[in-house]
Length: 187
Figure 1 (cartoon, helix red, strand yellow):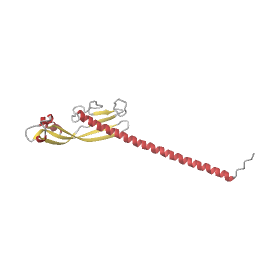
Figure 2 (tube, rainbow, N blue to C red):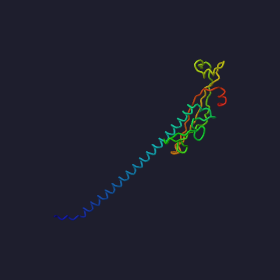
Figure 3 (cartoon, helix red, strand yellow):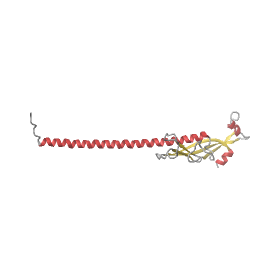
Figure 4 (cartoon, rainbow, N blue to C red):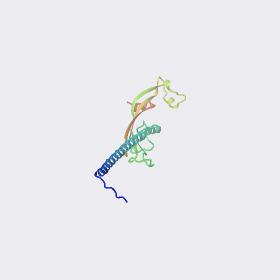
């Protein structure tokens, strides 16, 4: 058996430097890992905000389309939707996917009163009275018919109470209506 040689002061100094360098490397790797985790967390928040805003925007656009399809968008005296939430011109959209609609946890879309932007009288010459019953009901002797094409500005405000995302959508909608209805709605 051989007896281990004694360590010189130079050997112990080298082992001390290796320990210091190892600790410095460990600190650097820890800082890199921590900053990477914070960067990933920040990016996830950005993506969540983009998704929440897109969901709220889609809910607002869908509500406008539903109100137009339901046919009650321009008539402010009747509900704008088949199922309302928090008012006759409000609709809740199930954003959580749980199958229940609640104004506390789902996106709430409110349609503001439509604003009449423009009115264009319809000429009798542009009506197709023989194939369209709605055009036939507009016909009146003379140059102009009893109907007008109207342009409305519709505003939908959608809010998600869970994420805090909010969006306001403005759309223009064209509608043909009678001159009597135009006189009441479009001053």
